[in-house]
Image (cartoon, rainbow, N blue to C red; front, side, top):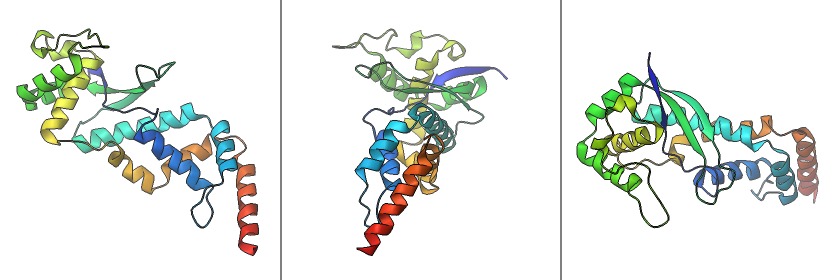
Length: 208
């Protein structure tokens, strides 16, 4: 099966709602019965955690949830890419997209929506120079499109079939099943000691 690499719409992990989701999970792990987090323990956790692995697990879950929600079939999470500095760009994630799915989405996406999204994403403006024509009709056959062009197709397809898509809503199932806490716990060396301190503090607090 021939596949293409496509980027998915994703706000990244820097100052985004996804970053807030992981921050909430981290603080909830060391909160007392009143829901107040222990700042010292959360700071230690934040320093010790291997966040790159946590982000990878989160991105994979997000990609799978995204494709299931919008009806992209047989796609597979491929990778993430994080910038060295977050001045001008944020984290990106990529999937392997079957060629047949790209062709199907092309058939089922309106030219008006594709033109609108291509214009928004690929028109040069102050502080941004586009390497693509905003006219998608000049891009050639979809079989030759790269990950950025395919993201444009995906965004237009989603706009036509779903309307606005809530990125954090896609993670509702993972959040409800405690998956963010699991990812953080599994990738924080010495977390058992932090748990022991947390339990001790909660017990002492209950006695007062």
